[in-house]
Structures are given as structure tokens and as C-alpha cells.
Length: 304
Image (cartoon, rainbow, N blue to C red; front, side, top):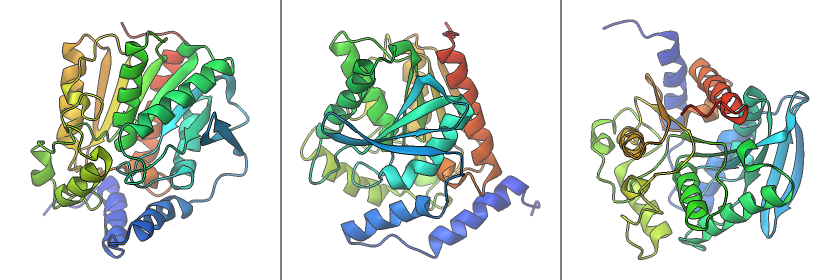
């Protein structure tokens, strides 16, 4: 058997830790478990955090000393629409801002099952409008999300297009969950190597979020959407993710619609590996890559 690479050893340590702390059945305990993933990592001393509110949606600014205050990442956390929070992703969002040279504005959008589809989209739109009203030029906004938040970012962009509102400068989608009908083959072929996400768990999450809506609705499963007119998009996914096919298919749909799309598949990485960047070198490299993409697009290099 080949000797594992340093990247493999990094992510194998995370796998072992996750396996030692299996997902609980209780919803409140599940939410606490996701929050704890981020609570393990303290913020660097130079990160400034400021609570905020986008209309009625709780939110949070982060910035480092070098951040350009005229540029911002609007970030939508992961958690399958039922968990995740400002706390769970704060460290990773702050690092993304550092790498891109921007401020960040993370939203605590409403969660299912208490607030099913389309509540989260309404909150994301409120966050985007808040940034416009605060003086940010749309081309200086990067709209970003991880996992369910990645799909939510696409749904937000589609909703902006439908309303005739200006598009953000770019999209950054990390491990996006783009098919709530769960038809991707990697849900099965990668099940053994991805400790975070399984078909059975995703089926529970989809039921909670959809609340009877069609899982093939383009606003919940953007692989079924017409993506024409969306801004330049970076999709990052790990090769060991059960959601690998969700990202691959979204990239194909975007390319077919003439979107300037970049797809990065990071070897050996599991779902949402960016969360573990302090311990995983590939997490640091992938955030640096996202930062370069965002800098270039917000600088006006459209990629078209």
C-alpha cells in the first residue's frame, strides 16, 4: 500500500476525530456539534468581529487590518439548511477575508425545520440588499457559500436576476449541495471516505428544508436551473466528498450557460474541509486559491 501523503495524513486525522464523535439524533445536539467544529479554532488576534443585523437577519462583520473596506464577501454558512451558524464558520470566513483582502459579512439565515424553503433565500436577499444600501458597489461583492450555503448563494443570484437587480462581482461555492433529489452517483461511491455527509442524512435534511416543495425546483437544486447571466464562479470540491457529483454537474450546467466557471477538485478532501484549515494544509491552500479568485474578480478581471 502506498505511503499516505502529508495531505492524506492531515485529513485522516480529521476523519478519525469525526468518527469518534458520531452525529447525535437530537436536533439541538446536532446543531451544537456543528458549532463545536468551529469553536475548536480560536481567531487570530488581528481579526476584528462586529455583530450586525441585515434588516431583521442577524449577521456579523469580520476584518483584518489589510482588508479593503470597499470590498466584501457575503457568506452563507453550511449545515444542510438545519444547522450551522455564525460561530461554526467564523474562523474560516475570517481567513477567507484575509486571503481575499476583503471584509466579510456572514448571515445567520433562518433554519429549517422551523423556517423551511424559501425563508433562507429571503434572508440572503435581505443581506445582499443591506450591503447595497450600505454603499457597496455590486461588482465589489463576492457572494459565497459552503454546502447548503453554496446552493443558497446560487439561488440568491438567480433571485437577483429575476428581480432585475445587479449581480455580485463573483460567486465562490465550496462543497455545494446542488441536488436535493439526491441523484448523484458519488453519494454512494464516496460514502466510505466522507465521514460528514451520507445519503440518509441528506434525505433527512432535504425533507426538513423542502417541506413538500419539489426537490427539482431550480431554487433548491440549481443543477436544474438556467444559470445564464450569473457572474464568474469558482466551485471547490474535495475528491472524497459524497457531494462530488453535485459540484461537477453544477460546473457543467454553468459552462453550458456560458458562465465563466472555474472548477477545483482537491484530492483526498472530505466535505467542508475548509473548516479544518488550521490543521489541514490543503484547507489553507484552497482558501488561498479562493482568495486569489475573489481578488481578481473584484479587481475587475471578469474572466470573460
